[in-house]
Length: 392
Ligand SMILES: [Zn+2]
Image 1 (cartoon, rainbow, N blue to C red):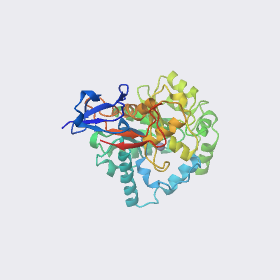
Image 2: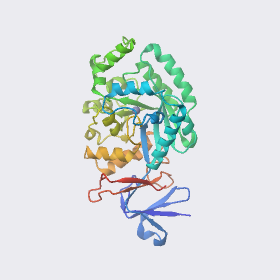
Image 3: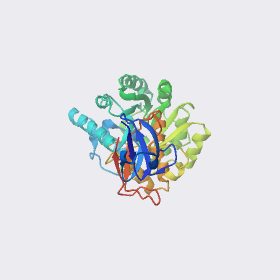
Image 4: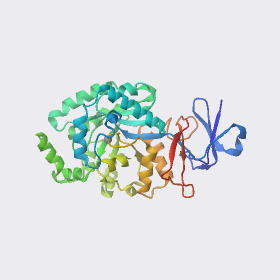
């Protein structure tokens, strides 16, 4: 049986929006076509108030940290945040952790998310991923904190990588955590290792200005942290350049870097990676930025860039909702809804190499169908009251 779903507006994403557009799907939720209402039998139409958009792609999450919801104080800065994560990481029972992971995935599905770029340090989220209810690209995240830890980081991550559930078209790669926690050797190793997995890396980037300071002059809180840990930091050499430009040299020009957060990224950083001819995708998780650092990226700089959206984890967010991230970006930029929707759907699908099936209403795809209510249609924008309802 065919389904004919229609609403005030239909955003195919691959084409301009249609007023009163109709989406035609088969029983299996595969898109057959779309068109105007006049073209279809009126008694078959399922009519909704609102805007139809494809399922969302969450390009940055840490499902395994879901049990830390509301456990970490807000706006304390990244260093205090990371310390707290490490301190409570093993403080919850396995049962509590697994329940939180299942609940978090369910929340994402309810919020119209159909695929996730998920960071994993170990296998604790795999029991859920195995069920194949959501499509994942799992990034096995590594850090070595110096050459002494490199070999171990590589070996451990390879073991975790081998266990990544591949249910429902899910995929994976190994990636470096952040510029301040990985040696150049480890970053280069991740890049080489990812060669067979779509050459996709996801690195936490420029989350605070101190990271740039470290790379420019080897000073600041990260130097202090290594000292406090009693860890050897003699291996680290300041490059005199910001962190993004510094580590880009260890990443191949045929790899794609998902640069996550970019809270302190400036025009000169964007220009530098383009000058180096690097493939870069900018991933924004603004609610987490407010939660941790109480600072947002300068979204205006990225208007013409390949951008995607993530929620980060429940350790640093009150919800896992791409719509809420879109609302926040809209509030702090003049980026139009149509562009934000691309970030939330097709751009994310392309980033994770899921665009054959997901990210837009195109015949043959099975992208999921979301209804956004309470938009301001006069200027095509989200309102505080806008909500998401997953229809398919
Ligand atoms: Zn993260």
